[in-house]
Image 1 (spheres, rainbow, N blue to C red):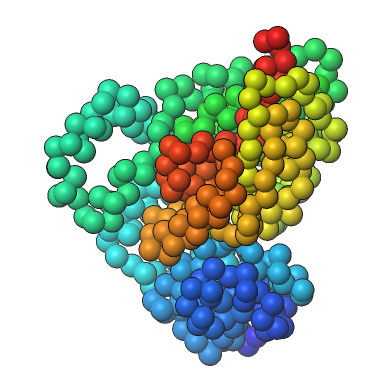
Image 2: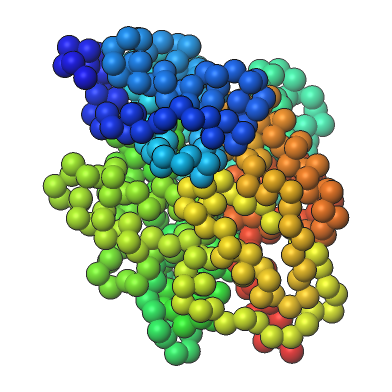
Length: 436
């Protein structure tokens, strides 16, 4: 690329041009892309977006509002990476393009800037602040105030988008991960020492899943270290164009763990896991952290991946009632990390549980980080498709391994079918053994 064409670019100027050139425009990605399938427009496909990125990198196009809108219309589900025969690194292109959009400020609106500042630079940059908000939200829900507010009709004064979001607010747990998990726990014979990631949304809404994860690790010969006040891993920041804050979050998380003493760092959230395994790329130019980040990448493991790797113990005994279950594959687990068989192996090991395969299990449910907030119409369509597929299985329960997917599916399917993390079902099976 000619140097003068890059003077107005920041992030895309730093992008290895060979990554942009990888795309052969073969079209293999088209049938896998939810937005292309919806509109049938080339610009709404992975290869169409890459063509736009290349034109900008070449200096033939400017970074405009239309380009920004297109980058945020993409779910970032990474289904195209699984379909791509050329191995295009779309996640990197996607993150750099969004970062460039934010740097150029082409989507500026006062309201948008405020919400980005409040969420990315305040709440999800500080676990202390996030937990304060979490406790206030728990009080609002547990006290019954939320029911009074809804019944009063006062929510009608809110903007339409906020009014529609309010009923989908997740239920916050009364106790967060640090209240449920000791900083260092070990069971009987210990074969491994692992670190446990508690996350941000996972910490507030699914702290019980974190407790289940630790219990399963203890049952399988792991000493578990869970440092206090870990905070967000930075995936939300990286996926939403704030690469600088993503680096801050990555450094903090690396410093939180004694990597030299650990055999693995365990996560149970697919979206986080996909990001956690790429700290080496995020911090490649950081002299102090680049080698630490590479070590981190080698240690980062999804819980199902780790369990299968160490040969987890299959639980004994039959429950009083058998149950059928279907499994939705979180995009950043199957496409982002290539982990598909392992969660199924965990589910199939549980006595009394029959796995029924889900049609289009790898298709996005519409959660996609904050996509269901920023693009509610498209997210809603994908949610309906996913719920209809689940209903056709006739399963009693749904399993998935990502908090966003969990909430999106539960909100779509209602109380009719429970949604569970595979590791929680395995933990429950271990507990049934001990109860007999």
